[in-house]
Length: 112
Length: 118
Image (cartoon, rainbow over all chains, first blue to last red; front, side):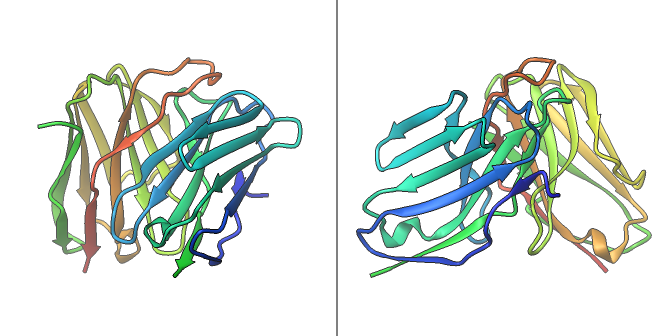
């Protein structure tokens, strides 16, 4: 079982729609969770961090965490073509010191 | 200069060469990381340094040798690499998390070094 699993996509959504990206993880002891966006040929940039169960909103982005189900998601409201990128889920490994494990990413395509 | 800076941006080396990748952070962080990103694979954690001490070596072959002289600088020394080592090498930094893994600060990435081994 992979430590952090994401659907590779592509996830295709029309402009203005809500994009829903999902991530599951295997380490029940994980406590810190992050979503990064990576444009082709660029390095990952942080979108959201979430540490507690529930929802966290920042502008058009909402992160949702359910530790009991070992599931974290990212919602992007009013999707724009500029949101087209690969979204990486990252989860801390409970057995390490600053050990952050990434999923393979979901490619999102927002079409006009 | 701000953020995390990596040099060189691109590197082509032969299998018998020795080269080094450099990373410098200007964020006042105390944790630094090397990740490898190959095509169609997840980001692979290679090494973690906390307060200049190596705290994670993710079973990385000895042909990769990291060095962290202080909290602002991180190097990756390369020697006798293989073609399959061709990848994007990303450096990152963060504030210190907790040593028991219960809390992590977000990572800030540099622009990466695109390495090609011929």
